[in-house]
Image 1 (cartoon, one colour):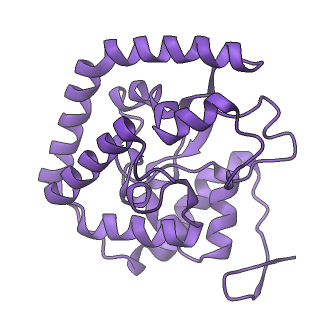
Image 2 (cartoon, one colour):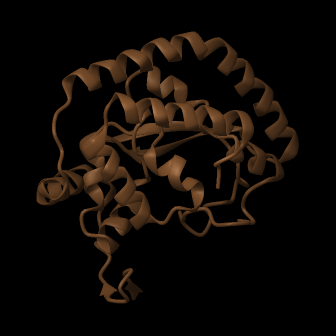
Length: 232
């Protein structure tokens, strides 16, 4: 038995892999009116335009960095340096994203779970690339092809999204916009933010998203990548 944030027992729904998308669509429909979502066409056009331009401009230097850190990761620990993982995208649609490996290859031997402070599954190189968000660089390809955006709520794995939605009814509202490489929750909480805190912060982004918030997230993300400050 698991307890929610108020200490009340919760029942974890059992969802078959083939039914994830329909489950998320139904849950979004159920809770969509709990967040003040409004279409913002000018912002969405701007966001996608920046995604394409930035991805194309940064592609070559990013590929060089990915190659360098792939070699370092391979030297540091066993296993392929890049891996793909299924995450939940906009409107509950499943997608594959790509990351540089920051954990041991057996990190999910006992099931998927969030990383914790001083998580023993994280490798020596992994600590550095997570601190500077370098592990997310391969997702620039995913951004270029429109699977995700530079800015938006970080996509979670389906199993954890179901669990977090059971613990925090309406967690799925964060799926109403395109997921991103970095978001409001990341610059305000980093890796240590709880699912409930992440949900609240992502809903703030959904309701307030616009040019000012976009540039603030973008600036603070670049600062974190270059200095490691703000990464938790």
